[in-house]
Image (cartoon, rainbow, N blue to C red; front, side):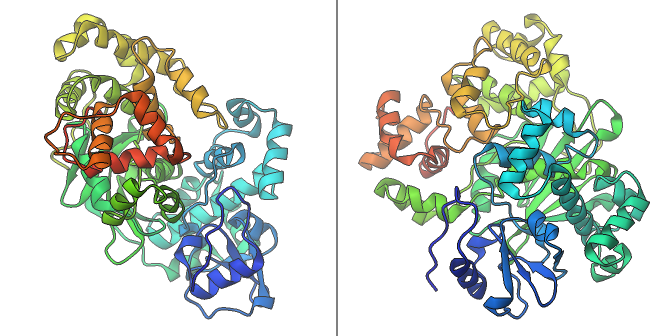
Length: 508
C-alpha cells in the first residue's frame, strides 16, 4: 500500500492517512501518531499487531500525552513507550525532550523556564499550543510510561522503580498508575519477564524506525573511540558514563547492541545507575539517532543522483552522535589538522593523564573522560606534552573553562547559526570545528563542516568517479554551493560522503 509520508513539520496526518497507515502497520508512522480505540479505551502504536479496529472506533493523537489526557490507557502489547519519537526542529519539542529526560523530576517549572529562556507562563502556552497538555501533564505521562517500561523490562524493586521514573514516593506512583491506567503496577510486571545482563545489569530496549544501518554507525563510532572510555567490539558499543553531579554512584558503564530480528537496540546499564535511567536513555537515543525518519531524509537526499547511489548502497542512514557534548568538543579540537587515528591516540593520553578510573566488566573501558573543571585547571605545560601544539592545548583549556561556565548549554530553539556563533567564542574553535560539534553533539541536522578535507575529497570523488588515490577535492566554497540543495539534511549528506570512499578523513 503506497502511503505518502507526512511532512515532519506538520502536527498530525489527516484521518484517512492515519487509518491507511494503521491498516498497513506502516513502521514509518511509528511515533508519528497514536490510535485511541473508543470501544476498549486503549491507545496503540500504528504498528500494533492486534486486530485493526473499525475506522469509526478510532481517534488519532499526535502524542501519548494527549491520548492519556483524553482518558485512554496504553496498550500492553505494542507498548507505546517503545515508539520512536516524532521529533521536530522547534522550541516545543526541544522543551519536551528535556521533560522526557526528567527535567521536572528533580526541579520545578520555574527552573526549567529559566533554563529554556522563557517565563513559566510562556512555557505553559508553548506546550499547550503544540501538545494540547500542560507541562505537568506531559511530565506525568512520561513518568508513567517510563515506569511501565521498567516494570516490563527490569526486575527493579517497586520503590527503586518509582524513584527511577521520577516519582517522589511509591505511594504517589501507585495512586497515579491506578488512576490513569486502571491497573496495579504489579499486574503489569506479571505481564513482563524482566531481564538481567552483564553483572546483573539493567537491560532495556529502545525502538527506531527501520531501516537502521547499524554496522555503519558502529564503524564510525569505533574508528573514533576514545581509548579507555569507549570500545566497539563483537557488534557492541561500550563506554564509561558519568551522570549528574560529583557523587560516585553517578559513574558507571553501559553497552549497546542491535537486537536481531527486531527494530530495537538493547541497552545494558550498570545496576547502580538506576536513579539516572531517564536521563541516560535520552542520551542514548540522541547518540544513536534513534528518532530519525530515514524515509523522509533519504527521500529528500535522493533527489541528488550523486547521493542517491550512496543511499541505495547503504540505506538506513544515521548521524552518530555522542554521549557528552564536552567530550565530543574536546575530541574535535584534538582532531584539528591530524588524522582520525592520531586524534584517538592523543585523546587516550589525555584520559590516562586527567581521567578517573572506573570499574566496568569490559577490559577496554577503564576510565571516565576528564571533567571540564579538571582540564580548566590544567596548564599548557600539562597538556601539550601529550602530543599537540601549545596553541591547541590552550584551546582545550579555554574550551574547558567555557564548558564549566555553561557555554556548551545551547538554549532550546536556538538556530544553527546561533549555536555555531556561541561555540566560536572559544579561541581556537573555528567554523569547521563548530559545525562538527553542532552536527554530532548538538544534533543540528543541517550542520555541515564544509572545511573538512576528507569531505571535500569524498564529494569530488563521488562527483567525478575519480581514482580514490587522486588528490582532487572541492574547495570549501564549491562544496557549500554543491550542498545547498541538501538542506535541511546536510549533516546526513556529510555522513554519506564520509562513508562512501576509503579516504583518510580529517574529521575527528
